[in-house]
Amino acid sequence: MAREIKATPILEGQDVIEFYKKLAGFKENFKRLGITRESIEKDAAKLRAIFKESREEK
Image 1 (cartoon, rainbow, N blue to C red):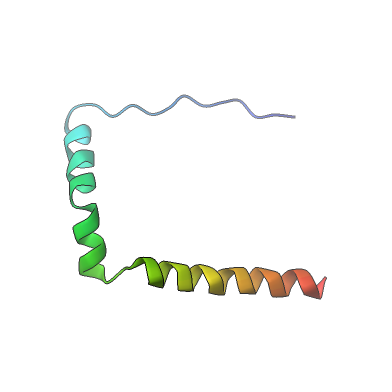
Image 2: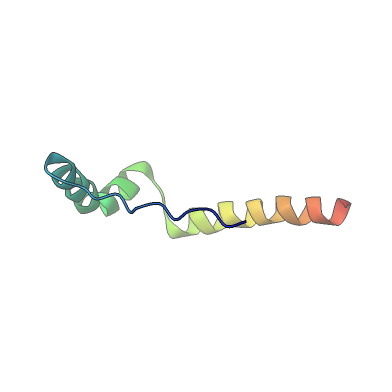
């Protein structure tokens, strides 16, 4: 049976300001942490390999 659809949360007041501050610094945070597209793709490939191995074992 399908579950009830929950209401979308709405940000108000200070929460909106904090959210936009996080969005504004998104790219800078990735650079500061050393996260690159290549590192994400490499980690995703490792994760896919794990799931592929578990499917082959069944």
